[in-house]
Image 1 (tube, rainbow, N blue to C red):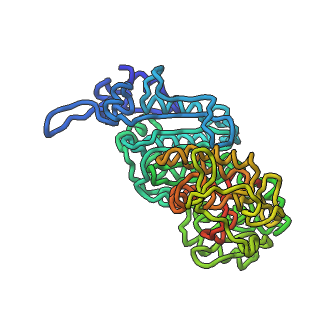
Image 2 (image 1 turned 30 degrees about the horizontal axis):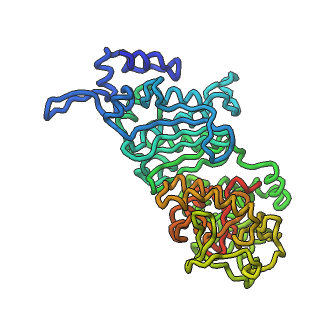
Image 3 (image 1 turned 90 degrees about the horizontal axis):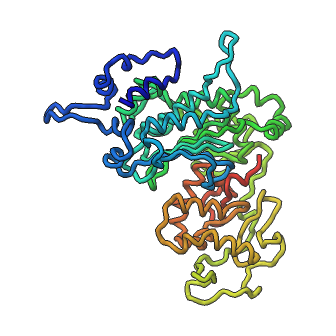
Length: 486
């Protein structure tokens, strides 16, 4: 039996004893849940978990037609899909879950640049980062909905490891981070991993991922869900928790007071320095503590002079003390927005809802060329990046670029959320863009764009707001995260 030999030869820990391997081949398969007998009908055969875990590609396709697993190594810290190494069912290997796990884990830990651990004076090759990556991979595989539309996707980039599985979590992400509670979607598959010495007991996997990243002093992992299509995502950034520039800024402002903060308070202050602002929801993502601890910590940091609060109740946001937070009205004063009742035709021309052509006549412009860069974007010392307040005053090169990026959305009314996300992120690179211009470019309603793209991308940290304390202001601008510099 090839499965038996494969597992027998595959030993994660040389000194690990796997009792199941002492059984004969058939009893071995039965013991790990790969073979079952229906007590009512008397029929027996391979279980779905057994087929997915150890089956051939043909058997897997018969049992789960939507099944697909994909590992991609990408050369740059970008959302583009170009890859330099890939593992997916291509006919050269079985395509089953266990083979995918073995091949992918080796790729994930190859050339891993991490601190080493000493035990009794001896360097340990197996570190907490290895444990975290192994658990992240197993967790993705055993919690996936293999009837869903999305594939398993594992991405390795210079700046992060990403894991995606189809299906929402069965418990809230914040509860999974705290641990001690689990509701595994594929229990038999999880049991199989446990019996061959891989994976963690129920409820302890996610906390081990977080503790591993904390051990390496890397940024807090991000575990979140998307509802359309349903999926769970885990992002493990390998960037340092705090850059030299941020450390210098904090020391200049507060001296050694930051070192005297507790772990949660220090994480909040560092994040406010690195990201420009944060709110209660973002602060909760920085810790596995109960949200009430965050609720108590934020006003304390304001009282002690580390943070300044803006807004009220749910709209409240926080910035570092001494950082000025401008409102849209401070920047744009009484200027009115251009009409959002325009859209782009298939030939690229702009027309209004009454069908009249909008010309390049300067009389149509809402303001002068003052305070604009060479591309026609609004610039001010109060914003870190240019702001596209009016599409029609941009130069032809930038207009054409934005129209080209958004053309697939205008051409097709139905695009996957993943494709729409990619278009929006590309539109927002290098400048802030307000909702009404994004909606016009992709030919969707503002409500549709806000609910399906902008709000989820902001929540995931892929987009940043120009005015975090005025989230639903009509002048709100969005920019891709990679464009922010620490």
